[in-house]
Image (spheres, rainbow, N blue to C red):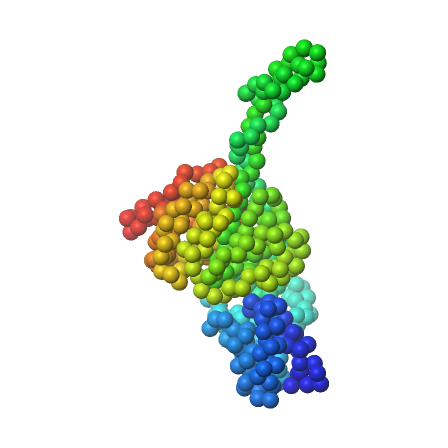
Length: 404
């Protein structure tokens, strides 16, 4: 077994990196927990060793398959290693929905063998056929769900997100700036200029200063959102470093302000700092409690100048919407625009049936999907457009229900 000869710690760290590369939310804290757990339980029994690491690294049922395969392959099970290598061989498939477990295993193969298949790619480029109705790789990537992307596609998506810019429309503020063609006369500036010039009066003018409104992002990092929250962190990092007055929060069972961590230019360093600061990854969701804490501690400070709020969550609340309507109403009244981004909107038959979703809907200005690059680009277009009237999302949804 790897780990003999005093190299157990190094192998545990490498195993954690493999799980993280395969898509599991593994951070430095879990590596420390794994080392402590293994030191307590020991490595004399392979089954105890398996379940010890399973208890540390696995948070959700859909992560069991990738962990099981990674454990047996990494800790030297030749039979499973042959099966994993067979997954990268060419195979004829019929178009259809991709099984989530197969997608997870494919990511594990790429994580364990990042260089595999490069020679085959060179051969494929020689026999490539140009079809008139085919889409480019970029167009396919824009429409692909983040959940179904391979490691290479996720890397390309993150690079595309890093290039996104958010040209939010400027809005007038209460402050004024000198302007020769301004509509208002600036008497103070006029008198100061007259004193400097010895009595010669030149009427000075001013106009309202315009600047982009503050942007506040509230992102759900609970278990049901973990497949999307990490790619959204890249989006929040790109936006935070693109413009000023951006505040970012994440919430699961509690609210955490991660604005200062995302100010780092290096995205990897920023996300490592976030992983160290946040303690409720992939847990439950208490949306009402988190919004109540934001309204009580942060709203007066951050929403005083007509901020735009992006609420990224699927609306699945552990508290069944208790107190959520009141907090959503207060948040909606405090900001210029409240936009709810929900990955579940990618499904055509989606309806807000849970109590949490029904409590949130009446207080949302925009209700949009966010599950691929195309949806993020559409969001940027919406934020760049003039502000729309409040309540349009709820009114449109209720009109759709009445028609149905």
